[in-house]
Amino acid sequence: MNAVDILGYVAGILVVISLLPQTIKSWKTKSTKDLSLKRYIIYITGLILWITYAIIIKNGPVAVMNSIGLILASSILYLKLRHG
Amino acid sequence: MNAVDILGYVAGILVVISLLPQTIKSWKTKSTKDLSLKRYIIYITGLILWITYAIIIKNGPVAVMNSIGLILASSILYLKLRHG
Image (cartoon, chains in turn brown, green):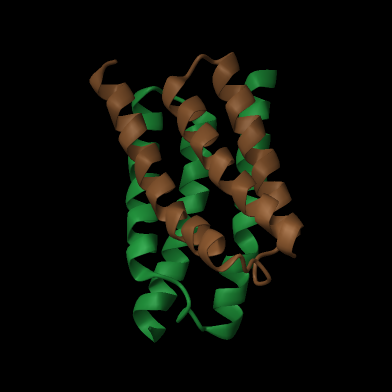
């Protein structure tokens, strides 16, 4: 891994950290009423396309970081579908 | 622009669309009390690093889409700093 890749991973980690509180809050409270289902479906579709794109161009940081984002967003979507 | 680039841009546009409602809501209500300042600062730092990374590896979709994300997130940060 070179310095440029590390920069990409650091960038991704910061974005993931910024998404974590919402995920933790949703899991703790099981309350996702204020979250828009439509918004999360669009977001998750976007993340899946980013991952596909990153795999095609063989870009590690974009693939790995969007995959982590996908796991977080999917876990919120799961709560939303289960608890409304 | 090739088909792979287009995939990257479509991915980015979907993620940006999913962020728009929060931005529009914040601008309409001028209320950002529920948004965490710390979260936005970490998110914006992450976006700036993604843009730097994308410029270094000369990746158009990642640079352009994170720049749009940066504009949206910065406009929310501006509201947050101005209105609390």
